[in-house]
Length: 98
Image 1: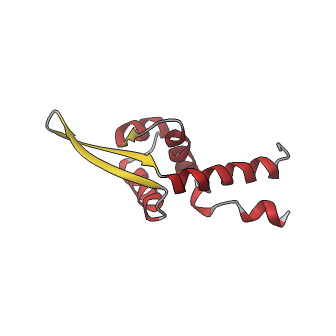
Image 2: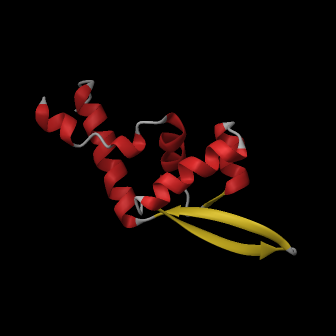
């Protein structure tokens, strides 16, 4: 049991962070507004969780202008993808999936 729990990552324990990483695992990048709509969260709530994932270097931020409007999009880093895969595998083992 100890081996299973060692790969459960505190950075992904929150449902918003879990949702962000899930979206970024299957998309090259996702915009702030798309994440906000997908996860049904406020700007401030999403921003704080994104900042936490960025601090861990699990995501990277890209800022650009589209039609003269600022657009922020996010992508999972290779470190973030690997950490998230380990987290999901640990959860699956914990519930007896693998």
